[in-house]
Image: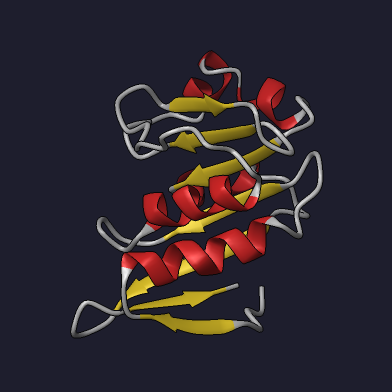
Length: 139
């Protein structure tokens, strides 16, 4: 996949602003894959996406619960974190396919762990840690 948009974020606030603008373009059924190392800003990106979808809920990382659902915005937001999953079959246990068909926006942290299960038309956001606390955001 060729990533044609690249921005440098110098703060979590900037990352959230970029994500909010991005989320305003999404439609029901959109899937967003977030790729990046620990601490690269994936959850901050989701916080911005929630804001862009007019969702006022407090967004937190679903590392231990695997999925958080946020309702009340323009579209439901389903935030998944696959970091702790080891086997593809575990996707079925969390209802992965059901979320994809639920008519909201699915955003998947660590989507590259199970790349074959991600829909082909998914948006891919790559967050890279740079020096001086900056992040490269590419999509």
